[in-house]
Length: 371
Image 1 (cartoon, one colour):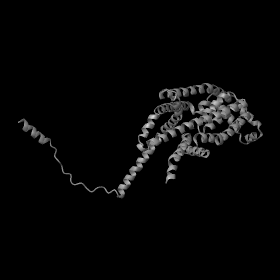
Image 2: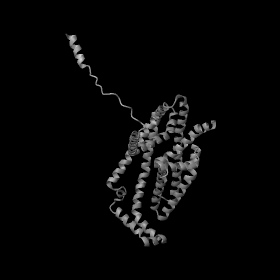
Image 3: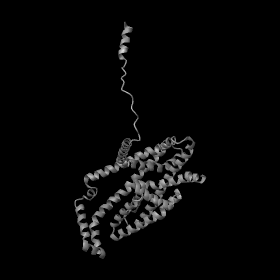
Image 4: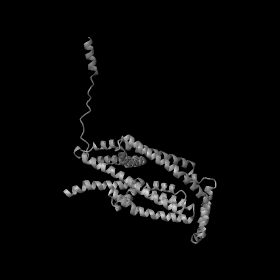
């Protein structure tokens, strides 16, 4: 009885096969409707992907900057490793030096910058009044009254001590600027720490995607590219040091206060490609204006002349010697990189150009000679 009951139960559990008819003809992929549908799906996917990339573009910028800094600091880490330390210890030493540099910068530069800014705000009305002593400016002021307009505007923003707040767009603007700058700086530092610590593992992982027969050659080219990026960072530091020394001496000659602090500011500005010297020129000119209008004009002209010498003489020669990049390629690549990616493009342009030249010399040109 038990066996017959199980057989009956199993017969009941057996699914009944339903006939849904014969399968139709396959979809005609050459039909216009099918092509239009697939093309529309592809276009929509591309639009969604572009919007997604645009929404996270700032994150990609931070990643690129951190990766660039990690690659640039790698030669210093390797130099310390040659003394018998582990990579973790070498990275810790480099980052300790970086944090120490930030501390020295804040201790040396911030106090005189605040004092000079306060002094400039206090003497700004008298500086504007002194402009009337110039016949040409006085004549223009008689027709347009721009000095009186500037004096009224300056009086309105400094009478209640709200110059700094109004410059940043109000109290909320100040808070946003401080939080945004702090978050961006910490993010870049943390990403740089991760990248520089795991750089050998990341390179090794990427090389596993290369066929084994070409892995050795690609590994050597990758190491050469990383070395060139590090050389570029070192070259940029040398150029910034030269600019800082010149501006510090120039400031001392003009009798500007705290020339060492001014030199440190110019060193930091010089590390920023393209727009760094615009910021430095503005800072030096403002500090010089605290002395007199004529000294401010001399400081402005002197800085502009130095920037031209650096851009067209010093910078191309140093890059050509250390990176084997022609001066014209240095300038053109910086212009193209800036137009494509802005500040980040200007930062990456020269090492990318050096890497492209390396690939051309080691891969493309030899193949062209053999063909």
